[in-house]
Structures are given as C-alpha cells and as structure tokens.
Length: 385
Image 1 (cartoon, rainbow, N blue to C red):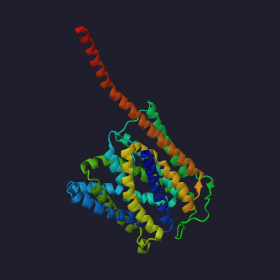
Image 2 (cartoon, rainbow, N blue to C red; image 1 turned 90 degrees about the vertical axis):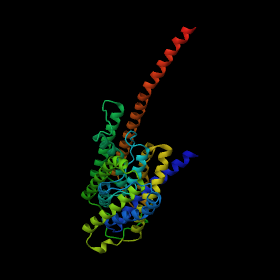
Image 3 (spheres, rainbow, N blue to C red; image 1 turned 60 degrees about the vertical axis):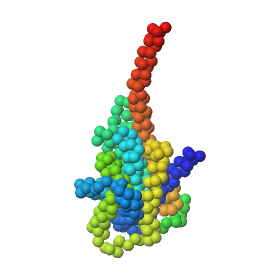
Image 4 (cartoon, rainbow, N blue to C red; image 1 turned 30 degrees about the vertical axis):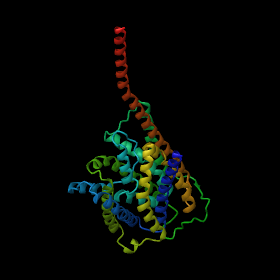
C-alpha cells in the first residue's frame, strides 16, 4: 500500500510538470509575450510564498539575519539561477540539499534562464521541451566533475557508463535540433486549446534549431545554479525565505527584462484565459504543491528514484500535447528523446554503482578490524584451556 502511494505521487508530480510544459506553450500559442509571462509567473510565486515565509520563518524567529553581502549573492543567484535539478550526489548534497534544490529549482526557475527557456519553447514544442529537461541531472553531474565535487574514472565500469550517458545526451540534443524527420500526426484533429493569437504553427527549421539551442543553454545554466547552491544554503539555510527572496528578486529582474523587450504596453495584457491559467498554474501548483510531493517521495524512496521518473513527464507531455494542442510529434523528437532518456539512465546507473562500491570499500576496514579482534580472542581462550 505504501509503495502504491509513492508510485501514485510520482505520476502526479510528472503530470504537473507535463502540464507546465503544455500550458506554458499554450499561453505562447495564444499570443502572450514570453518575457511578460515570465514576469507574471515570478510575481505570482513571490506573492503566494511570502505569507508562508513570514509566518513560518520570520515571525517564529527561525530565519537567520540577512546581511547586505548575502542579499547581493541571493540577487545574483536569482538572475542566473534555475533551479532545478534532481541530483544523485550523496557526498556533497545530502537529503536536505536535494530538498532545498528541488524547491528552489524545479519550482521557480529564475529570471535569466527562464526567459531563455520560454523563448526556446515558443520556437519549438512542448514535447521537445520536456525531452530537454531529462539532461538536467546529467549536466549537473558534468559541472560537478568540473568543480571537483564528483569523479569520473573512465577505466572503471561506472565511469564508462557515465561517459556513455553524457555522449548519449549530446547525441539526443543534436538529434532534436538538427533532425525533425517525418511528422506523426495527432489523432485529435480538433484540439481543445486553440491558437487565437499571432503564433504560427508552422515552425521554420532554423527557428526550431534555435529553440532547442536556447532551451539547452537554459538547462546548462540551471544545472550550474544547482551546483552552486550548496555553499549558499550552508550560508543561509532558511529555505522558505531564501526561495521567496530569490523569487522576489527574479520578479524585479524579469520586470526590467520585459520592460526592455516589450515597450508596447498593450503586449503586457495576457492574451486570454489560458494564459492566466498558465501563470497561476506555474506560479502556485508547480512552485508549492509539487515541492512538497517531491520532498515526500525523496524521504520515502530517495532522490535517485525521483530522478529515474523524469522520463514519465516526456511521455505524458507527448500524449497530452497531442490532444490538447494538436501537436504533431516528429521522428527526430522521438529519437532525440529516447537518446536523452538512455543517457540519463546510464549516468544514474553509473552513479549508483559507484556509490555501492564506495559503501563496500568503506565497510571493508571495519570488517577486517572485527576479524582481527576475533583472531586475537581465540588464542587467548586456547591459552587458558
């Protein structure tokens, strides 16, 4: 029964993230400006989280004092930061770091990178967006190796598995960007979410490649944000206030970006009801509900189990987008998605094998000590006899 609840929760989490890709894409198809959408999304999340941060941390006095230096650091993290990731590192990021990372990462997506992601999504498709998300843990691992927080031993089996996973992910991104292939037509010829704005369904090949590139770039920056969050969380561990501050700063930054990009204030109006729903969904459901669900799953099954469920979002997005958006799926998207998923599992398998080997090696000295003590006791007993 317990496992059934965990599996049901995993499905719900992945449905939420599939909804994020689909509803955001629907808002752009409706004609809403990408930069304005990002500003509204951050503003809603900040307004929603502020009361929780005040009553649960500030009022109770559990939040540490915030210095000017820390404020500047959080402001900088809010600009380039993602959020995201689901890391499988056990040495540098313990369970609480994974929890904080998920809250700050998957839910909020800060100003600079979310604008890149949104523009990329506008050029590409919800399915390709969901597929790209599968490389977040892989990119985070690559960056962790670069910062010497992780190791990559190519002569070992787990090292070769990780390297193979990285190459598969690179191949998946290339396939998504450069090869669309035959289109698998949607079975639903009357999509529920119609495009009523100025968006054009027929995407130019160069725009598609640009969209994949922008989303990949945003994922790389999100992963960098994740790797750099450990020191910040050690310095300021108040997760709710930390998140609320980053989201508030991201709202200010997104406002400035939107002001520069959209000087026609008629574009600041949401294009329709779907755009409003998408803003509320991404700002509240993704930012709050999915966080608690993910923390619960991590406590029950661990972060690796949650990471391995990421491809479900791709499957859900592909199916639901076909019915709601009437989105056709290219053969290139299927091949690229499959390579990305295979790369994710290869890295996770290699990481898991490495951790199991490290646990066995750590247990050997203790076992040898116990055996030596037993060997010393035996001669003493025979001497007394």
